[in-house]
Length: 523
Image (cartoon, rainbow, N blue to C red):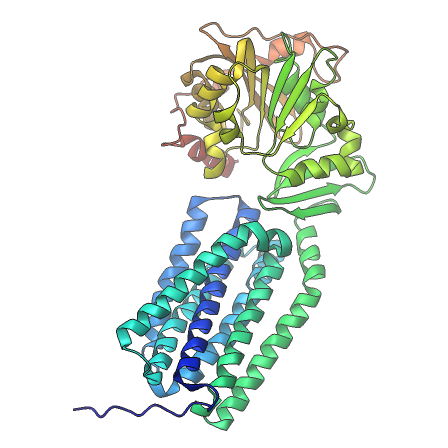
C-alpha cells in the first residue's frame, strides 16, 4: 500500500486557500492565453487567405490534437516537479505564442512558407497549452485542500470561463485595438507574468537553483517580448509592404477585416485591398463601376439601394443621376466608409459621394438588413459585394438573399444587378450566381465586360417576372468606358463561356463557395 506524501510547506501568508486561488488564477490565465493564440492564428489566416472553414478547421483540429499530446506528456511529469514543469511550460508558451503572429506573417510575406509554418506553430502551441492543466492539477493535488474530483472540476470551470471571456473580447476589443501581432505579444507577456506569480508564491516548493534558473528564463522571455513589441511595428509594416507592389498609404485592422490602401509612386494607381484581395484599381475602376451601375439605372431610379460599395465608387455613378432622390448604402464595416470619407486618395476617386445629402449609410450585415427592410422600397438594387469565396459571404449570394431582395425590397418594375465575378476565370461561380438569382424567382440577363485589373468580369441584371430585363443605357452624360454598342456586345458569350449546368447556392448548401474557390485556384 502506497504511503501518502505529505504536502510541502507553503508561505505563511499564503496557506492552502491562498495557494488554491493562485492556481485557479493561473488556470484562468492559461485559458485566456491559449484560446487567444488559436484566435490570433485563425484571424491571421483570414487576413492572408480569406475566411475559410477548411483553414479554421485545420488550425483548430491540429491545435486540439496537439493539446492531447501535451496533456499525455505532462501526465508523465512527477508530481514533485509540477511547479518547475508548469513554469517552464509558461516560459515556452509565452515565447512561442507571443511571437507566433509575427513569425507567421514573416513566413508568408518573405518566405512563402505559411502553410508549413502554421502547422508547426499549431502543433507546438497546442502541445504546450495542453500540458498546462495536468501540471496545475498536480499542484492542486499537493495542496490537499479539497477532493481530487472537485479540484479538477473547479480547474476546468476556470478554464472554460477564461476561454469564454477572451472569445467574447477578442473580436470586439482586442483585435481592433491591437491587431494580430501586438495581441499575440501581449498574451505572451501575460503568460510569462502568470508563470512568474506562481513561481514566486510557490518558491518554497522547489530548490533555490530552480527558482533562479526559471526566474532568469521568465525575465529573458519578457525582455524578448518587449523588444519584439517595440520593433514589431516596423517589422510588420515591412512584411506587409512586401505583399504589395505599390507603397501602402493607409492600413486599418477593423473588427471585420484587414483594409489596405496603396498608391503608386506617380499617383496614377490607387488600389484598395480587403483581406489582401484587390477591390479596385483606379486605372480601370470606371470600366467596372460604369458597367455595374448604368445598365440597372436605365429605368425608374428614384430610390436606390447599394449593398456593399463602401468605397463610394458605385455611389459616385448613381449620384450622376440628378433625379435620384435617395440612396441607401448598406456597408458592414464602418472603417471602409470612414476611409472613403477621409482619405484624399479615395475622396478624389469617389467625388466626395458620401457628403451628398441624398445618401444614407447603414452599417449592418446586408443579409440581416434585407430581412427587416420595408417592403417595395427601392427602384434599383446594386449588389456590390466581395467575391463569395468564403462561408461568411456565401449567404449574401444565396437564393434566400435574392428572394428577400426580389420579393420585399424591389418596388414593382424595379431592377437588380449583382457583380458576379469572372465568367472566364471562375465560370462555375459566375453561372451559379445567375442560376441562384433565377431560382429566387427573378428573370435574369447576364453580361460581361473587360476590366484589365480583373480580366473578363460579369454581372447579372434581374427583375421580377418571367421576362428578362432589357439591357440598355440612359446615362445623364457620356460615359468613359460604355456605350450602347459595347453593352449589346456584353450580352454575348463565346461558345466556351456559355451557361453551365450548376447548382443554385442556398444557406444550407452554399455551393457558390466551392465553385468560386475551384475557379480561382485553377487560375
